[in-house]
Image 1 (tube, helix red, strand yellow):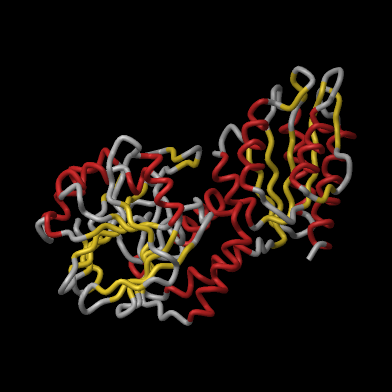
Image 2 (cartoon, helix red, strand yellow):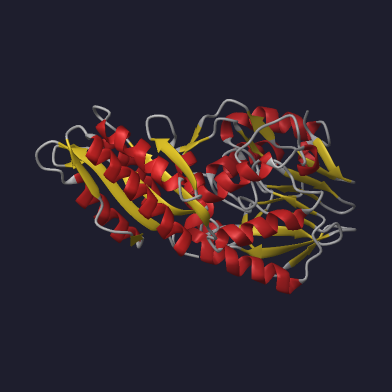
Amino acid sequence: MRPLKIAEGIYDVGVKDWNIRDFHGYSTYMGTTYNSFLIVDDDKVVLIDTVKEPFTHQFMENIRKVIDPKKIDLIISNHAEMDHSGALPRVLHLIGEETPVYCSKMGEKALSAHFNDKKINLHVVKPGTEMKLGKRTLSFIETRMLHWPDSMFTYLKEDGILFSSDAFGQHYASHENFDDEMGEGLFEHAKKYFANILLPFAPRVEKLLESIESMGLPLNMICPDHGILWRKNPEMILERYASWARQETKEKVIIVYDTMWNSTEKMARKIVDGARSTGVEVIPMSVRNWHRSDIMTELMDARALVLGSPTLNNGIFPTLCDVLAYMKGLKPQGKLGAAFGSYGWSGEAVKLLNKEFDTMGFERIDDGLRTLYVPDSEALQACYDYGVRIGEAVKAKS
């Protein structure tokens, strides 16, 4: 299926990784792609980004189907992370060690640190710099901390194509290549990517989108380094990013829990029933069955996070600790929080969950709900009522 011609003289020569199932703790159950772009113009042949190192041979074969790789005049590195730069030393060995590699100022530092035993001919490009290729012109947009310090975009002026590195992408491999070949489900993959990669940088995303709008750049296509390319209506993914960056929420509650002897799960079920009775959307999420990255995806537009944990060794159940450590790093904002759990003789878990809410800056609904050992009918009614209270709090917070 590769290489893929995306415009006259422009090709995606990247590769599809059908088998990867984890990316830094993010569940990639649909695989991913490492997109790389070859521009063949009158005066210059340019390669934008490379691929993950194990795919170098396939990558070079893709390039050979378009052009002799030795005809590549220069390489642009939008991002130094190894899924985009891993093949770079081998590519340079094959096409010529002296081939210039253009990157941001921070990219120079990152690439030098990654490949400290290699002599790479690095050249720094400043934001706004233009590079003539013949009929076409490239320019560069700094996107520092989206999501690494070195990140930048490359814009192809005459074609209105934005090569957006790790922004606007998805960890998703399929036989389709463009957004118009897919349905609304594509945005769910993009949402998951944002929730698990870009959410900590949401304020920077807002500023970047404002900057792009102020530039008035015509956007006929957005080409990220992962997943599907946006050609039908690139503005749609920009609109979604704007909403996600603002961390807009809806009347939705996710109830994330684990249980030892099913007591906390019994509590969770009644809280779900109570919250649903108020008309809000409620998603129960047992951490035994939901991956942490899918929990984060659902949390992104939820107004409330409800955490349930039994007390184990005077603490939170370990599986909840895993989710919380991951969640805190992604810095969700503007949420309500509520805690519950069953306990035997001490019952610290709910108090500790409340501390986690405070650390994340969540607005706690109250001090939480605890049940000693197995919840009886009275305790289950209290759980139902607690769910009602949570649902009403969600509806009251616009």
